[in-house]
Length: 89
Image (tube, rainbow, N blue to C red; front, side, top):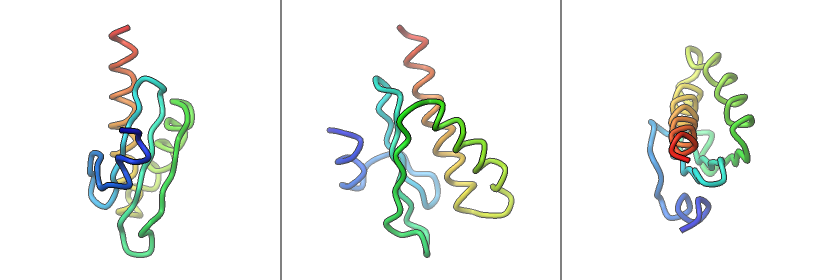
C-alpha cells in the first residue's frame, strides 16, 4: 500500500492529532492532521532535507502549539525510520 492510500484509510503512526506514513525506500513521508482548524490538512515531504527543515520549524514552535509539537514528533519518527533503513544498506 502506498503512503498516500495508507494515510487515506486511517493508517500510519499517530502522534496526538497528527498521523504520518513513511516510505523508507524513497526517503519520503506524508502527514495528515485531525486537529480542529486543521482537519483534512496534509503535507507530503519528498526528501530527508524537506523533512529535516519542517522538523526544525515545528520543533521551534512546539512550545506555542500542540499541533506543532505533534508534527515535530511525527517528523522525528519519519527521520528515524528513514535513517535506520539507510543504515541497513
